[in-house]
Length: 242
Length: 163
Image 1: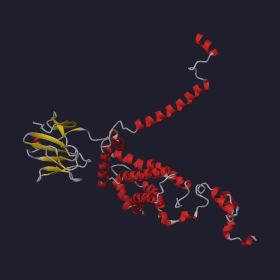
Image 2 (image 1 turned 180 degrees about the vertical axis):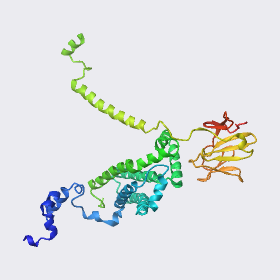
Image 3 (image 1 turned 30 degrees about the horizontal axis):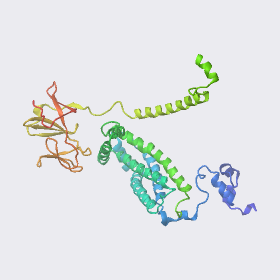
Image 4 (image 1 turned 90 degrees about the horizontal axis):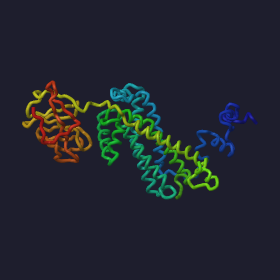
C-alpha cells in the first residue's frame, strides 16, 4: 500500500521529519492533537475552538487587527533600526536616507508610520466594541483594565516614536507633551526630568525616548498582550455568548 | 547568663526560635536587596551631568542694542529689549506649553504661534492660555563690557538694567 501514499505523506513519515516533529502525517484526531501539543510554538494555541470564535460580525476582528498591526510595527521597526542612529546630529538625515536611499526604505518607514496611527485608532475601536457588547462585565473586568493599560502603552509608543525623526513636528510635539507632563502635581517636575534626561529636549531626550520606544515599552506590552489573550481564552473564548 | 537558666524551665515570649530567626534573616535579606536594587535603578535614571547650554551667558555690548530695539537671541531663546528705562532680558518660552513666542511690532506684543497666548513687552499675560508672565532675567555688566544674563535669577518686571 506504500505506493498509494502522497509525496507529502511519504515525507512526513520519514525519519528526518519525525526527528523534528515527532508525529507522522496528522491523519487521526490523536495525531492532530499531538502535532499541536508537542510543538513549542503551537502548543500555546487551543487545539480546537468553538464555532462562535470565527464570528466576524460580532467583534469585527478589531482586537486581532490591533495585534496584527503590533506585529507589523515590530518587524518594520526592527528593520528600520538597521539604518537609524538616535543622535541629534544625524537622526533626521538617517530618516531621509531611509526614505530616498535605502531599498524599500520608504515602504518600511511609511508602513511603520501608517500602522502606528492605525493601531491607535483600531485599539480605540476595539475598546468601543468591548464596551458596547458588554464584554467587560464579570468575570472579564480585569481584562478590561489590562486593555486600557494596553491602550495607554500604545499611545506612549506613538509619543516616543514621534520624536525619533527629529524634525520640527517631533521637537515641538515633545516640548509640549513633556511640559504638560511637568504640570502633574508633586511628581511632575521629576517625571519631566527623567523623561528628558535633563531640562531641555536634546540628545538625552532622544536617546531615552529611543530606548523606551524600541525595547522597554514593547517588552511590557508583549507581556500584557499575552495576559490579555490568556484571559480571553480562560473566560470562554472570543465572540461567544455572554 | 542567669536569665538563660530561667528560660530553660519557662520559655519567655521574647525568645525567637532558630527557624523563625533564619526565616527573618533570609527573607529580610532578599527584600532588602530587591528594594535596594530598585532604589539604585531609580537614582541611576537621574543624570548627574547635563550637556545643556549654560544658564548664564554673555551677549553683545550695550552699544550693540539700539534704544527702542527688540533683539531675539536664537541661541538662548531670549529677547533683549533696550527701552528708555534700560535693558530687559525676557524669556521667549511661552508659559503655556513651551513654544517660542514671536515679537509683533505692529501690535506691540509677544504672540505665541502655538496656541495664541499674547504677552506685553514687560512679560505679563494679555490673553490666551498662558498661566504666568514671561520671566525677566537678571542682567549685569561683565568685565569685558558685555551684557551678562543669568537665567537662574528672575527679576521683577519693574526692574530694568541701567548701564
